[in-house]
Image (cartoon, rainbow, N blue to C red; front, side):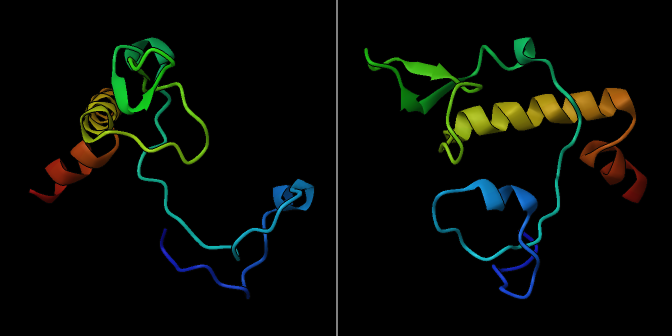
Length: 99
């Protein structure tokens, strides 16, 4: 988030279809927009989202707002950074330019 919820910001159109109260709109900046295929993250397990038998589900299984374990989150970040580097963009390239 780049701003706190602000009632003066216009609400996104999808909010018109919601049947529950929401916070005011806020602004954000996406840190990663590189597409990554499911098969590249399917091996990462999220210990914060166990299945019925108590085993962690794959990180790509979850609901909106699903908490993600630190290890799974760092794994996703590394995969995104690698994909960004291949694409010639992203945080890794920006850091290289600054050095």
